[in-house]
Image 1 (cartoon, rainbow, N blue to C red):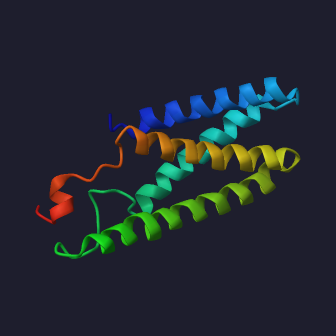
Image 2 (image 1 turned 45 degrees about the vertical axis):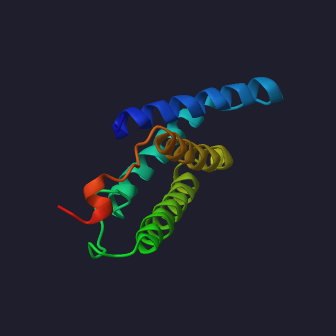
Length: 138
């Protein structure tokens, strides 16, 4: 189960269900249309930025014989950090420009749905490193 599109759709649906449960339990009105819109924006931007920054186990700029800790730092600390911070900044700017009256809903929905995508994809094995990438063999 390595389909980014399927994982993205499932993550948006999971976050929408979580927002619905939150609205029901808290008794607070939640603009569900905005939740859905910004969830799609958050997950979409996260997947695009993941590709842009190379957060993909099949792509690395490290030498084939690099130690495992260097691969960890390169992938999980540097690339994931770049992806997350850029996505957060983009969602904040877009929410302020295009939906300032629902700013908090936009930022929370965009960021938490992206993290839902990341967690779901990690859980189902979408970030597993193929043996060739682990060993540096083509």
